[in-house]
Image (cartoon, rainbow, N blue to C red; front, side):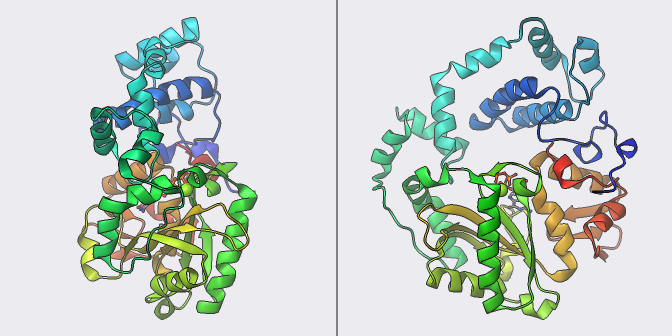
Length: 370
Ligand code: DGT
Ligand code: MG
């Protein structure tokens, strides 16, 4: 039930935000194979190469029919000679030898396993592998983790950073069994309901949208991402922190990994994508035992819809949205949209208006899986 005009979109566009990208596509198997290549570049920390594969996979994801011939792929953007030969091998044999050898590589498996722990990036993963560690169990011994390890509530940026760097890996290892369990859609909805009921007691009248993969139609999610605001801007002031305190006291939030927006200097930190108030937490429903990752994002009412668009994803969609905006003399990020020429802030009143201002055709969230 959405005004989706496929005529306006173009699967040959260089911008993911101009293409319709379904969750499952006609070339799904090929995409999954090529994504192994992207993943190995990711865990090796080869960012440029990773991005090339990410772009290529995203382009193929938008292709409307099953690819049968090499020349079809040749017409697509971001598909260079290396990719063409991989696609050709796939069309001929159903396999890609470089993908097979990656999947057979012990190093790839160890680095992938290490990187699945929140807080472990490519550098740390490679360092640990270099020490001779190969399994998560060995990491637990190395970090001295007991399964029930609990973290601490953090309320200052300094503390948050310390935990990210020194203790967070330990916390994440302790929770790894829970965090590996995907959350079905009903689970996401239940968490959302409980959170809204709690928020209503702290600050009545808030509104929210569940964003991330859930909004893009994924049947199960790795975490829950929610954007909040209050129609009255003054009510949003300090709300994130007040709400976290409440959830922590009630035992619904057990860890807050990363709080930002509480101090003005945070806006300058380049590691943040934006300057919204947000809390990345470990959350547990009353009466449940499985701990979940829940991200809370608090926006001002004027920037609510840019935050919703900015947090719906996918990553590739978001990246190209920013590039697209830049080309049109605009600056887009989840914390707002501005005109570059005079830094004028733009405040879209609906999600559709975000697209209108950017000069983009409307794309339903379920078609943003680039
Ligand atoms: P999941 O949770 O693994 O099932 O999949 P997603 O797509 O929900 O991924 P997630 O939860 O990591 O991120 C949700 C979306 O929000 C993602 O598509 C890109 C965006 N995003 C992630 N981190 C940040 C951030 O720090 N700032 C902003 N503005 N957006 C972010
Ligand atoms: Mg998510």
